[in-house]
Figure (tube, rainbow, N blue to C red):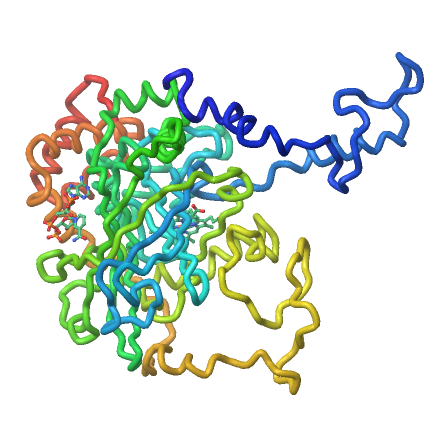
Length: 511
Ligand code: NDP
Ligand code: HEM
């Protein structure tokens, strides 16, 4: 951390920019404050009367400054910029974002670390959240992704259990490695993501030096209501860079806000000189419904990727981050991403985890930010909203005198007559309502095996095994044996190496 970087000069810069504009202090009702640093007292050493409204408002607002932190992804950083289409996709989607080459759409981005609390260190081994908000001409599209193309589970019922196993033990209030490895060893579907997590890319050097993935399978719908399945991928133009685990640990002590600072600095203007803003190239992978039926793997299972050779990346755009928030709480802490915000031309899929997420986020926002969270400026669409929802806490746009019921004979607002053209094609769905436990066990090992055998070189394999062993050693012996067996199912080679390090190597290992 350098001592006087751009972030350190924020207040000086504000003063220069606002010198002419700074008025006198007022309370929130705009009434002038008589003395901003002295309470009202009866006599120089006397008591404070209830009449000191200035003090009372000041103290009571302070008591209400904190809102609940996000239950996951609490620590993060965000910025603003634009998405630029470089290949139009009208054959596949009516989305305005991809309607023409050079079309720009404003975006907000929030990066995050998943498990830690608001004050936790940025350089821990953990997936990174990478959420994009597109302010399109037809509403907000939220692509709430991570820095990995896959995830730990394929059924939403497991999400709270998994997160509990990563968070603080309710008695010790500490991270609990028994809980972590116990859960993972009992849910082998997580092994693919765990291998990514303990590989070199498990600790990215910064939020700028990592790829992003929408991860789920989504649908694209064109003007003829033709559906194509789709994955969204955003590759860093800064290049992949990772931190060595020992260095990451040192940084965590020296500057826990390392990644927040890096992002802010990379976007700040330095004395009128603009740096190269961080950017990502945006790709899609496409699969027809006919192809989907022919795959050996389930294309709607988020624990699996779509192989590049069969489903090549198609470059369709880029995005650039060129503006820091003017106020972190207003514009980043209050940012609310919802996977159910899907604009015309982009839709959901039978991906079971996505189905769960379509519900979970807006529910979280109503708890964290209130029923009218979509009226907070940073969450508001750029087009007008017209609906029949009214009132609630902190309502700032109550739609005036427009009818609040439907049907009505006072001008609607009526349903979009063009929506028919982009709603997904009718789908015949039938099946027995039941619990299907075999979904739990669906081919958990093929792709992790390819990752081990074909993607990682010898050095990367070695580092992965050392990182895993260091963390597995922190669990009890029964759990250690069970988790080593899981990795043995991926590959004998991986299992043998891991066994040797976990059970026969007494050295302390970095994870
Ligand atoms: P390829 O053989 O065409 O490419 C391998 C992919 O792995 C590249 O995207 C590469 O990213 C990425 N990669 C390299 N090191 C790591 C790491 N430590 N952590 C995560 N990703 C890494 O891929 P295939 O499509 O044939 O799939 C083979 C295996 O690669 C899969 O089973 C999966 O485990 C892994 N993979 C596949 C991805 C996909 O979407 N198909 C994406 C990421 C991983 P880069 O191009 O930046 O070097
Ligand atoms: C944040 C739930 C899976 C990426 C959150 C939040 C909840 C949640 C409740 C906090 C929201 C808030 O308070 O603002 C779930 C559930 C999941 C799931 C129930 C599975 C069923 C995933 C997956 C990804 C993901 C698969 C990525 C592919 C994110 C990101 C954030 C987040 C990036 C932070 C968004 C921000 O920056 O505000 N999740 N999640 N989540 N989740 Fe998930």
